[in-house]
Length: 100
Ligand SMILES: [Zn+2]
Image (cartoon, rainbow, N blue to C red; front, top):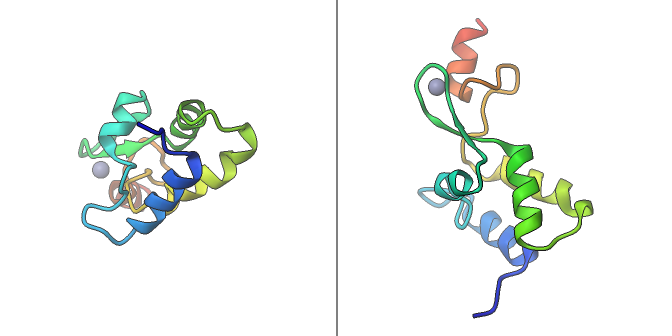
């Protein structure tokens, strides 16, 4: 079996942005497997740890650190929960409530 490249992975994530569930090959299960998943302090929703996930995926695909920006952008655009940008311990929904 041929291992997909990082470019193929990124293309598949991009293609699945509007899928239900979104993300394609990028999933909470994958993040969990890579040790890059945490949960909302309020409602226990799964949240991707973008930095950690990017690090582990760069390793998995043998990609150079220069690709980190592309990868993080794809993760942020994937439609999966990446947490509230002001309150990273919360999902985007609970982060907004708690910051009000
Ligand atoms: Zn939450």
